[in-house]
Length: 386
Image (cartoon, rainbow, N blue to C red; front, side):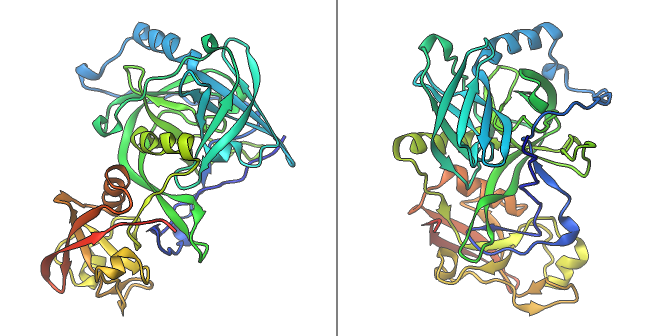
């Protein structure tokens, strides 16, 4: 069996089409949830209190599982280094299966297993490394295909109950329950810029529904049985005795609204063009002394740590910090983005998520920035990720 190594790490500077630098202090083993078999004892979940309007009974969960599980598949691949498995789900009656790119990466042979025991070979017809998505095509009778309904991830609220269905540790058709822990997170993309630094994957959903190796590519669902995300990765510091990452309550899923923009283009054209701003910013919330070192009285927004030469932001005159402060690697003098098209930007993820879910190359955006103590608006035209 192939042992999968961590594919993702948290970065100090996450990039929207620009360079980033990684802080060793923030690398805490963000793992892709795909792995060969292993069995671990689950810990007892701490009871949670939820709004009565968000409650669901055992029978409701059972009905949801019965409705959705026929559309969830196991994906088994063979590579030059061995075999591994992940999850996926049926997208349409034409035989398109959605999963993560890292689930099918390097596959020399790909098998799709359905819950009713049907097993068929599949072909990868398109990949998207920016959001870690892949489309697999299978040739089976339409009655074997149960497409899942896609929801609207913009309607999710922190605290909403969600379920994940997939194949952790090759334990097929496993369902776990949790909540939406946060929205608008960012992760490194698998695809990198010319200087080998990663682009940014935005509009990422954080959940505490148990996601483990083998869950990658499977659906994250709301209580209506609608897919609201595709499970992608976990952040953990724990591993099994065989070295596989284990769930720590920090899971990440690609939002379904990103999927709904990307997948139709992947099926029709084989590619999808992401909007490109060309800036870098801190991926974590600055502390008060850092804001003071930068010279701001405001303590929220996306502070620009880098602007790609010749990119859309550079052409619009945006500035990155270039004046040394008492904090190593933190430079003053950059612009602070506080809104995009009138929508507040509290952290960098707000900016990335808005642009990725609402804009396309060639669209214009209006950024509200603070520069040298003054507020101004900058209009720029988004490019296409190189």
